[in-house]
Amino acid sequence: MRNLPLGWATDIVVLQHMGSVVDDRGDHLVVRTPQNPEFHWGNCVFVTAPEAVDEAGRWVATFRAAMPAADWIAIGLPRMPADIEAWASLGLEAELDDVLVASTLPRQPPRPPGYVVRPLTGEDWQQLVTRQLAENDRSGQYEPRSQERFVRARTQAQRELSERGIAVFAGAFFEGRLVAELGIVRCGATARFQDVATDPGHRRRGIASHLLGVAAAWAADRGCDRWVIITEASNTAGRVYRRAGFEPDVPSVEIYRPPMR
View 1: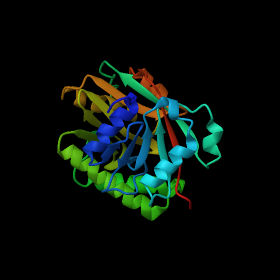
View 2: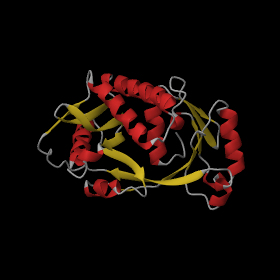
View 3: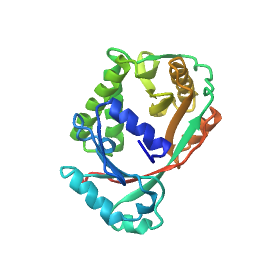
């Protein structure tokens, strides 16, 4: 896709791998994921014209016209708006995401003792669904039934990518229970990390760093020579990624309003 920063360019490739449809409308893209209609960032609008990012009213209207059934708003921007208040007045929040890139194989620290690390297979995928639904139960972030539909559809898409050899989703298991996972998807010669998560009781043990190296090596063995990971600018995980060899690229911006509860 033209004129896209690296973060969204790799997002688009990942989405297309999973069956999403991208409609290029010149100064913006409309992304739809028919098989997962409750995937907020798979059913969204991305503004490709940096000079148009302050046209808040126009882009909200564009989103609503493109996604009339959506009870959320999800709009990607290539830079932070100068007029944040224009978006806030419409009930929307802007979040800055750090896009981090490595052009050499990220470092892989040793596997922490007591953990088994392997690609997800078979019943592991159900453990992944259970973990993600339990996290939503703890946080109360999303309505449980719609979140379950989203998680099951997305997990199935990720499983199919893995079975096709386009991606790998690796997990760390402690006493047979999945406690951490991440994925990586091949986007040509660039590999894009996905869904880095660790159970709260197993953090700060080096599990995520080890999984990061395992997945990066998997992609390197399949011809990738650049690795991309995205994290919220406020997330302390960014320090972990920088220690692994990642450096900042052009950040991206998410404009979002969750479903009304």
